Image (cartoon, rainbow, N blue to C red):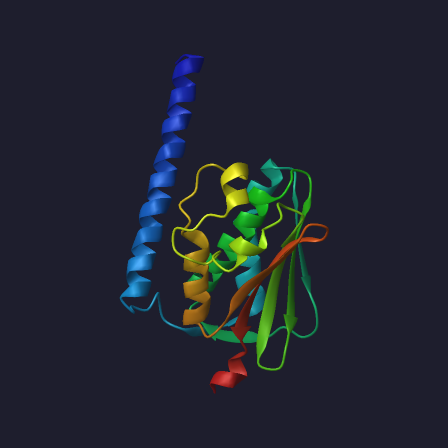
Length: 196
């Protein structure tokens, strides 16, 4: 097989992966909008959820010479959630942090308790998100002005799915962005004892 043929095969493989991802995203959106559950809720340790999500993305971070750092603050316990949907939400947010951060930087994930929930924050020193884009970041098919320049491909569905998944589990998601300190996404997951 020639070098040119190998490159064409790699391009085809990437295109196929993008199509599969798009179809899966559209199926998830269809389920969300029809009110169908994304799975059964169960009790699970939040650390297991967070670590599973990050483990799936370590190679992507390494390919951009980035470090995925995870830090827990305080006592982290169990949550009553659809585990796969929260893992997917964390993966979407962390994957975006990897894609839009500069090469060789750190993606910092922190988990800390509050009264009734846990907060997961994902921080990077990536592109600043302008004020006018922030209120629309979680809309279906929306891609911010900076995102289009940094990464040309993308469906604008990831953050919509993340928001829908987090909210279906009783949590919230939001972001903060500053030119000097970077961008941080936050998502919350209710503590298990609140569901007893």
